[in-house]
Amino acid sequence: MTDSTDIQYSRRASSRRLVVFSLLFLALTFAGLYTVYGQFAGRSITFDDRLIAPGTLLSVAALLLVYFVSDGLRLYFTLRALGHRVPFPAMCRLVFINLFFSNITPMATGGGFAQIWYLHHHGVPVGRATAATTIRTILAVLFIFSLTPVFLLTLKPLDGNSIAGDIGTALAVLIVLYLGFFLVLLFRTHWLIGPLTRLLETACRLHLISERRHRRWQFKARREMLRLSRSFGDYLRGAPRYVWLSVLFTAVFLLSLFSFPALLMHSLDYSVDYVMSVGLLVVTTFVMYFSPTPGASGISEGVFGSFFRDILSANHLILVIVCWRLLTIYLGMIIGLVVLQRELVANRRKAG
Image 1: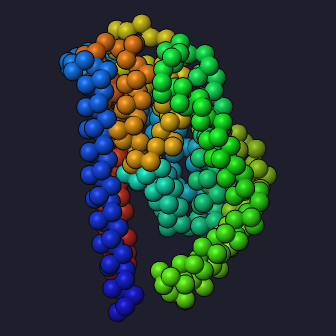
Image 2: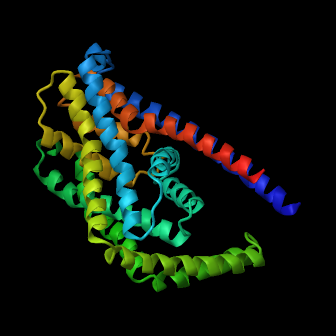
Image 3: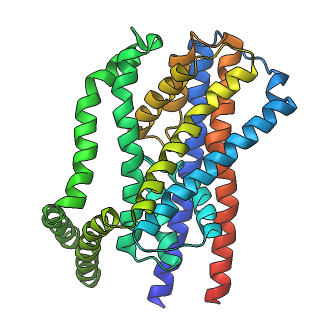
């Protein structure tokens, strides 16, 4: 009875947190858009029906297909390199579940946990699932962190930009800390076991967790961390075609993600410098990685507005920002919420 009550309480608490984060996401998004509207867009916004022209809608649909499919394939082939096969329909559902959770939780932490839970539910051990999602993240980070310094130094729209200047100052520290953590996690896992052990012991002494749960978590945490370290070695030793395909589809995913603003601007008859547009999105995404707000809400809109204010006319700036976020974030989140609800209903029926 106690376990059942704890589970119900945990579910209610999780639901409340999701509602709070969702409302926070909406509020911060509105705040970011209003800031851009007031500071960069001259309090001007005009809808342009060229964005719903048949040719534009067809191009957007094709790019969305590449974006979503490549997102699923980059994790799919990472899992294949680790020796696990998850049905592609399940991978497609996972893409949208990840989009939902990663954008309503700070620092995109929820997306990783949701994917691990989902993969474990489909037969992938927790350590392997953690390794696959971590490796998938590292591949994207390597692309973005390698290109960001190049674009910061070469793109004219970033000359004299205060946000870009702040990024440049903190760039080296962020890269070292972020990649350093992953390198320790994968190659020197035992360095993290000691601090984690002391953290759990402190939580137990403060009566935040029970003694029984403390012992169970200690065992599971050590086991899964060691499994994660071994799994990364297994990935590097995996079938080369799967390793290279995971890298290839990571590149395709990122390129499609960074191409949406260029497509939108082209549809509005702007003369688009594609490399510059992609470069500005790379730097914007870099900032989003370290945003403490859910899904980088508010911050992403502000950074985008700052970078593109001299490229887009005032009446198009807010319009392009909303369309960019709608296509890359909001649409996937809505689909993810629907998919998640269906998964939860299906799990309850099985449990019943």
